[in-house]
Structures are given as structure tokens and as C-alpha cells.
Image (cartoon, rainbow, N blue to C red; front, side, top):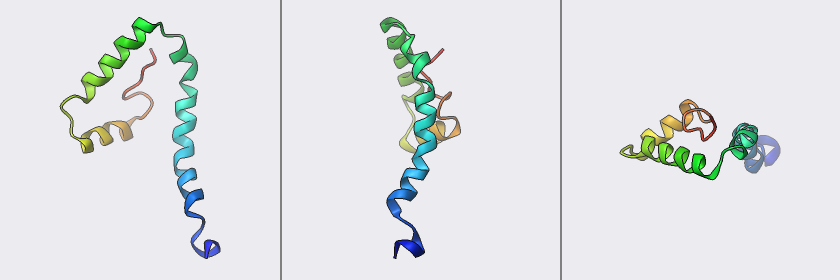
Amino acid sequence: MFKFFGDPNEKQLNRIRPIVAEINSLEDSVQKLSQEKMRERVLEWKAQLRGLDYEEQEKLMRKNPSRGLCLCP
């Protein structure tokens, strides 16, 4: 049956692999942030999301997942 339709788990993994790679690429720049700077970035991120419903948040994240709500400089 998987031969015809494909493994659903593998399909899911293939869908999220690019997202994981993008997140991992941000690790170095986020590690360089001080605790205070990290707090500031998180507050900015929360302010961007405040007032948006779930669908609007999803659109914002899909539009540019790494830069739309990025913690890095």
C-alpha cells in the first residue's frame, strides 16, 4: 500500500525538513544574543503577534518564516 501512496510519515518529514534546516541556520546568530537582547526580541515578537487571530499568525509565519518573526539581528 505504501508503494502506491507513499509512506505518510516520510511525506510529513519531507514537508518539515526545510523548516528545520532554516531554524538550525539561525542558531549561531541567536546564541550570540545576550539574555537582555533575547528578552527584547521575544517582546517584539509577541507584540507582532498580539491582536492577530490564528490564521493571520499562520500567514505571517508562512510569508517569511525566518525573517518575519526572527530573534536574530
